[in-house]
Image (cartoon, rainbow, N blue to C red):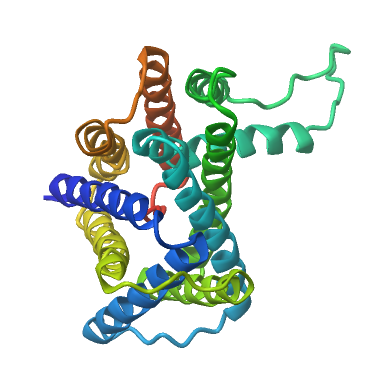
Length: 307
């Protein structure tokens, strides 16, 4: 069942991407982030009441930092969805595992102090070869997806997609820190939704509100509901995985969201995705799976990622 829950979560997140892409024709990124947060807050408040989880926290600073990074990632991802093929934007956002691997490699290099052994040789830095290969394969996929032939406007959207994946990695590491000090996932996601509403509202004060048409506004509702439903299914998938192998299966099945997004891209939007771009998407998926395997070995009880 945990596999089915994760596949359903991936389908819901990809469907949310469809709604974001359609709604972006009428609403700004600030408005999309705001309404995703408001609807998510209501959904998670009801879920917390049902679970008997209090929303009061002793770590407001950590939640504020996690929310700020998460909102930056969310806004960048929504911009990428609006400006480039859905499958490509989804792929770049799902690179968070590859970015985490890159941070681990960079951290190992920064912390390395060259010391000479008894034989007089300087010891090599403590790099994990599989981790390095994962990063190289992932960024090789990025080169194929975002090659110089892409138009200027879409290139900036691709840069925002890359930024969304990188900041998602920072946010995920903060989620791990919150989980380690005992914060329930429902509470963590609730404060992220609150941060989305607050920062989205501030953005609306600066950029103004789009003309309100009920026919257009109806697309805002599934953006919030599908995101909350996807998060709930993902949480259920992780909580029902009772063995390391099951957890690893669940973590890797999140990449099925890219497959769903590719199907949506071709059937709904007729997005032009050529052979090199498909190859790049495949390399990023492979590197993400590899990075997830290595992460699960290092942090076996890591919480679910968020989208």
